[in-house]
Length: 116
Image (tube, rainbow, N blue to C red; front, side, top):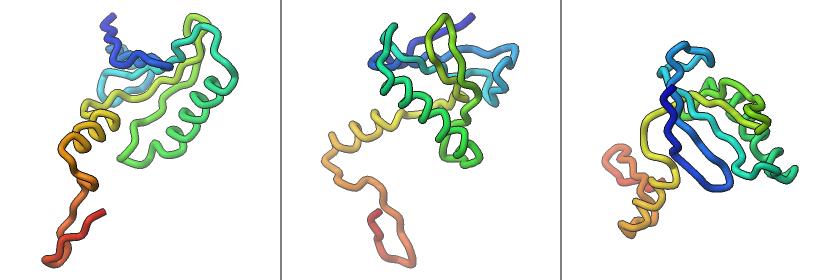
């Protein structure tokens, strides 16, 4: 089984090959997000559960990755999300702030420059 740790903080995120499509992934890979603390406080568990619930409600939106499952793995609360390649929001923010840009989103509408 191909497993790669992609984030290690208060949560751990693993990119896992889902070759048997056990979770219904669109990409053949899933992100498994778990709490790093073996004995997390209730607030952290609630935060992870809320993330799953919100992701599930918004999974029809193409701007968010699909929430596939919420379960306990080896006694640890986890959520399973469809894996999407790309830049993380944290990396994107850091990259754009290093450039000194206060608002990196720019759209041209009818010849004018509109900052969002």
